[in-house]
Length: 506
Ligand code: SF4
Image (cartoon, rainbow, N blue to C red; front, side, top):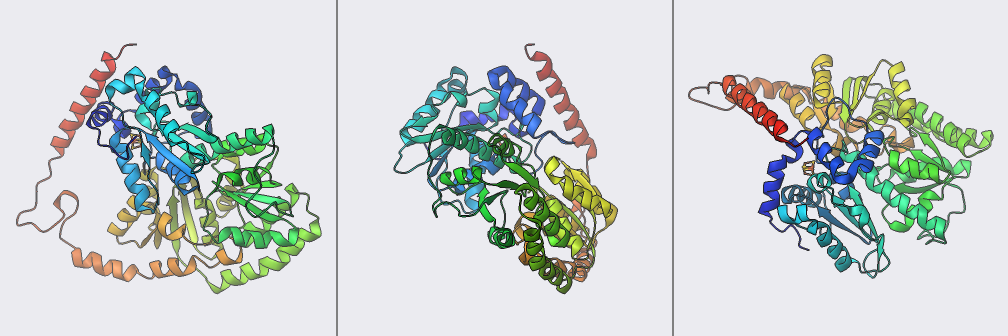
């Protein structure tokens, strides 16, 4: 096994199959023919697609890769084209992964002869040292999934180290957020069966003396502490956050009184919690209305006496109200993102005084975001699930907001048109959202950004006339656009794709 070994043959293969850019249907057909029907049908049911059939943001496998890399005593091996693995490894180190990503290289021969699977198996045996690892996560990317590399045939455990094999193809898992659920769900399933078989490891800090609430979805590090404070008057404690940071936390996550699906798209994980007999509550303690409704729902699911729920509300709602009033946000804001918390952020902005006409999330619709969707729609917000980039950009053009919160291309486009904008992932997700700490936490960054409008106008005026698109820059003679060339290339590509299609054996 090597770390990022250059592998030109696999790159050629990637180019042949087209990777992200080949028709998703073609990849899907190949994968099903190669024996991956069951897993792909499950993904289709868990993560139904939207207007776009392929990810419009980063490679989805980044989500599951990141979950594995954040866990203690967990090793990660990728199986995929070298260019995909290079991109994923680069991005994971860019985001501060502090360990190596394993890679089993392949070429056309090892892929089609089944030798790749044997190489992966050998790599797992070589790596499975119980002194170092609790688990090894092995991920098939697009090409090995389409070729049917059967990770399900790997041993479930080697030398006491758990082996988790998952397929995370771009043509089966729409977003990197949902890929986190693929791995979290696979781990919960494994841990649940371990717990069924016999005693399992206790939490690092010992068992909780109170019934716990498992928090589903990655969140700002201070948020679980804020939520724990909210639960305290109800004699409940905050349990682990799933995806967990350690294998043993999976057992305590399963051993909860109720699951709070703060991020509503974790369908595979919820399936495991439900199989363990746990109730699931959607939404989160955001703003005044959200916190009140969430405390009611958690209290009802755990049979907490009404006076204790009232005590929690009396203790925290006035503080939240005061924090919101002290940090008002004035202005029209569009929100789009791919984290899964977009609806909660929009609620907080509205409770802070903002007008939010549009929320687009790349994640699919589930019943666990119904409360938030209904609350937002009752206030005139258009909520779009599986929002495409075109829909997000269309909303910015339609509503001309004072601030566009969004993904990189949305922010780029908004700035180009002189609209202040903020990156959802880097600037909004990196703040507390819940309870008193969340109320008012967005005001400073949002108000500062809205206040930058004059600077955008000045910049736009300064650069006026330097050209845009193909003519951007300073020229002695502005370049002439050639849309007919692009049209001719497009026709050639369509013809080549049609020819490939008819040549395929039926
Ligand atoms: S693994 Fe990711 S980067 Fe590679 S082809 Fe699939 S979606 Fe694209």
